[in-house]
Length: 491
Image: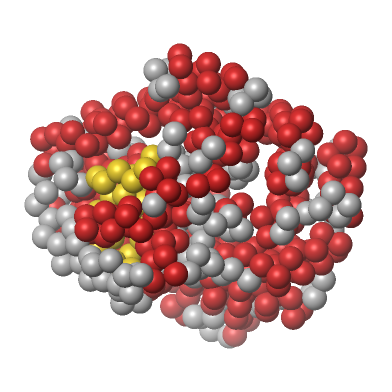
């Protein structure tokens, strides 16, 4: 067979794989991609397709590796570098994410998306001055990039006379950007006005931003009510207590959970100062990789599908999680997973990780609601936009957490945000005792450690008692929240 004939054969297989993938048959498409790569290990399109398939399965590290190999073969793909950087960020591999973005900036120094994404990386590692410079350059390169504005507000306090303030106001009013970007810019404007102490202007901007978000998609907390009920039925006491897995874990996973706006990043920041604790950030593995893996293996929906798995399959899922974190943080006695929404999956976590610990951050409902409502949520969840919806979601959260505490004894440790702000040393000592660790002063010595979660807006706000009553300056505007919380029996 000639080289041209061999190339044509591989091209034909790639076309077939593409048809299979678009037809909802990723497994069969993957088989063809493997055949192509067995004959040509550097076949960039096949590597790219394998990456796409891995993304679909929720296997982010595998997807990132195939995408990286494809980009090494064919580096002139700006979109590929951006996707790779985002994958690395989701995996908490921030150095790799920055490296991918730098490679793109070498090709296109004024690529707005690359400048903004690199700026975000600088926020996540605590380099706020450099972040500001990159983000301002990104906004200048493309003033319509909403992510640049929301990230800049996270990196720096904008003064009333800052040209970016004027630019945001014009873009929000004129509507010259896409709805997604307009939402980001409106939220950034609201956050900046809040920091400037302009209460009424802030609320007007926030109401406008939330109104725009409501137009992005249909939203309801009803789906969460259904999901939480399914969780409780699937993970009943008898099933949860069948903990046959033998822990051979290389570290103790510590899951920090809570409602959005509860303040989980602050607890993360303090604990990360301990010599035996490393933070892996807010990881998507429980929801994407493990739940997705269960569905892939059983061909059934999660959570009910977990009951189809035998001990060997459960052990494999557990081991895969440990391997994934080891590749990100290296050797550490304790590793923090700070995806606050993992509270939804504590039954699964209890079964898969016998040595795990859970820290549940609680906050006074009015303060929690205010923080949640004023902070931008990239998922556009209804409970981060609407006061009644937040109250409803908070009730569902309380109900589910109460259930988990019943079926998983001595597994969950509550940490009050207010107590943590008032006396961090006392509370951290309590937490460390629960974890089986001795107190170290380093936990309190460096409040400048980066908060490597999606909560960029908390990067510049040190833990302080001033955060406890911040909502009271907006009490008049929060009257609907108070009414909704009372109706739900939460205050």
